Length: 496
Image (cartoon, rainbow, N blue to C red; front, top):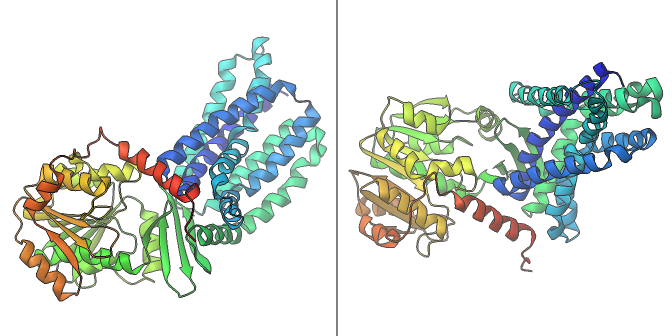
C-alpha cells in the first residue's frame, strides 16, 4: 500500500469511528435508559474493539482480512437498526438479561474492531523508517475530528445522509485495502448498490426498528413510528399507539403522551403561574409545549428555553400538529443551554418552571443542583417561584425526591410540596417571598379535582433536615440510578 493510500485509509477509519461512537452512545442510552452507564459501556467497547484489532492485525492474511472486511461492511449497513432489533428479539424470546452483553458485542465489532486493524499493520513500515508513526496517528486523529465536525454540521439533517457518507467511506477503505482480494477493481461497483439500497430504505428500516424495540420495551400491543432522529444532543423518537395517542421519548425517557403527563403540565406550570397571575413565565424545556399552554391561561408572557432545537421542531410539527404554543399569552422561544441562559439573562421572571426529566443524566442533573437554583433565584422577581418535579413521591420519599427538596430548601426560604394521590412524582414550589401559601394551593387543587397532600414550608424543612443537597460535586445519584434502571429493565424478574 502506498503512503498516500495509507493516509487516506487512516483518515477514513478515524472518520467512521467518530460517527459510530457518537451514534452508539445515544442509541444505547435510549435502549438501556442509563446514559452514563451506556457511555461507560460504549467507551469499554471502544477500547475493547481496538484491543481486538491490535491482537489480530498481524495474524491476518490478505485474503482473511478481505473476508472480515466484507462481513464488517454488511454489519456496518445493519448497525443503525441492529441494537433495536436485538432489544426487541431478546424481549420476545424472554432473554432480556442478555441484551446489555449483546449490545456491547455489537458496539465492539461494529464500532472499532475492524478499523483498528490497519494502524498496527502500518507500524512495521513506520519502524522501518518509511514514515514516522506519529504521522500515521495524526491522520487517524484528523479523520476522527472530521467525523465530529460532520456530525455537528449535519445535526439538523437526516441521519441517513451522514450514514451514507460513512458507508461510502467504508467502501473506499475496502477498495484501497482489500479490494484485490475480494472483487478486484470492481469492489466499489459491487458494494455500492448495497449501500444505495440501505440509504433508500433507511427511513423505513429506522421507523420499523424503532417501533419494534419500543413496542417490546414499553409493552405496547401496536405501535408505529412518527419520527425517529438523532440530534446533536440526544436520540428522539415520536411513536403512536393504536389509540392514536402519541408519545415523545428523549434518550428513552417519556416526555409526553400519558394522562399523568397532562397532570404534570398542570402542576409544573399551571399552578405556579396562577399564583403569579399576569406574570412572566420561563419554562425550561419544550417537548410538546403543553406546559406553555397551561402557563398561558393566567400569564401575560411565556418563554421556553430549549437547548435542542430539533426537539422543539419535532414537538411543534408532530405533537402539536403546527398549533402555536401559549395562544392566550405572548410567547417566544430561546434556543440555549438553560444553565447559560438563566445565569446571563437580564430578564426577571415571576415563574421558572422546570419542564424536564429527572436527574438521570449528567447534563440534566446539573439543572437540579444548588448552583443552578442559585442562578435561577437571581433570575426571579422578588416574589418569583421555581417549580420543580421531584422524580418521586414525597409521602414516603425516595432518594431523589428528598435530595431535590433539600437542595431547594438550601437556597430558598420557603418550599411547598404537592404530592398527588396515585401519581409518580411530587412537585415543589420554592420562593423567598411567595405570594401564596398552603391554603391557596389547596384551593387551586380542589377547583380542579386534583387529590393531593400538600406540605407547608415547615413540614418540608422537617423532612429534609438530614438530607444533603445536590451540587456539582455530588452527582453520584446519576450513576446509581442508571444502574438501578439497567437492573430493573433487564435483570429483575417481571411479575406475571
